[in-house]
Image 1 (cartoon, rainbow, N blue to C red):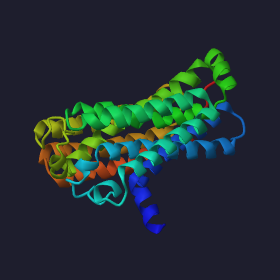
Image 2: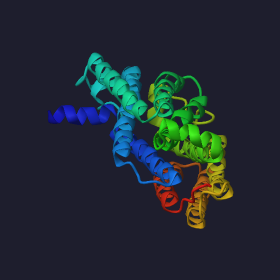
Image 3: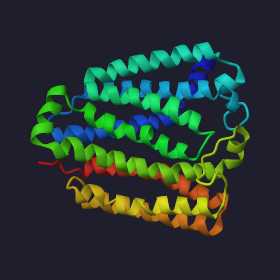
Image 4: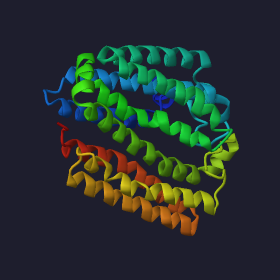
Length: 302
């Protein structure tokens, strides 16, 4: 049983899945604050469970598709499928079960959240995953399902009736807030994934993954990391510009963007793994910290 739990955690990529669930959960709480009522904690628990299952399913399908490629990379060779500790059939059953159950849980909250969860699984597992060996555009494609958790979490805070009412009386609360949250997380993924790809490029090459902008560690790829990191500075001002982010969030987010840009510039100048690792670690801290700060510095739109 202990070995199965360990393998299950690797199949669903537990740390990645928990990061996704955290992002969706924070957006749910932001949506609840926008509604102005009491937080329905049972719905928050349902979102957490459904989000975990849907994300775990997407990661499971990803590992099924890449099982032979994972054998070629040091960082993935010990996953349950390439190591032979779990069969493809077992992983498929687990992933299908998680995907179906997770979608049903999210649909119970509202149809939009359930629909977005299905779209997320399909885009991540069956579009982004095969593209990783074909073209660097995979990072752009993968940024869409990677940025969907804020949308799913925010909409999950609303009942179907709430969605109908707000879409007529407060359109900006239904459209502007979640899509700005989506946009920030979408932009964040480029410095995050490109810096990660720079750090582990040697391992990626063993499996034929082409995730750096030029498919190799060169000045153009380094510049793209710097540019994408630099964009995080103006992105920090979007919530305040649209009226739902306060000064505290803006300051924290802008400072984080400056760190992003500084380390991105260091990578452009030095073109080394150490600089790329600093960009990568900045990305690990930037997203959860800014999302938490926004939750407490959120200004409901009227």
